[in-house]
Image 1 (cartoon, rainbow, N blue to C red):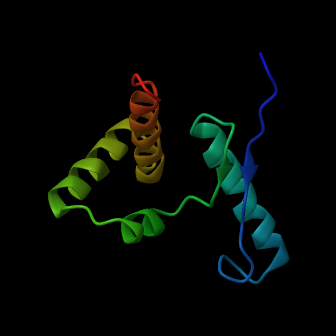
Image 2 (cartoon, rainbow, N blue to C red; image 1 turned 135 degrees about the vertical axis):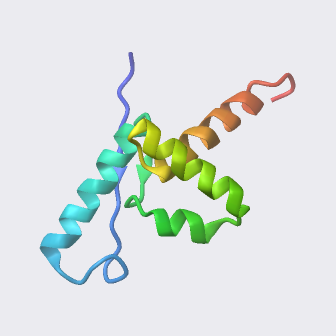
Length: 96
């Protein structure tokens, strides 16, 4: 097995202006990246960021929230997982 790296990023001053909080936010991003499978650069987990960055129908957002609650996971992690699966699926198509 090769060596991989996971990096958690936090942005000053957008995420916080306090140095100690900035480290905690970067650590949260790191753990979110590891939870998402590792070997990636991760931003701080923020449900608001995910929902604001892409349009989803209200019914889909409700279903995602229910699924996240049932699984005890964050909505943003489930969305990243689904996107990773989708990219893996289509990256393996012939001609890629």
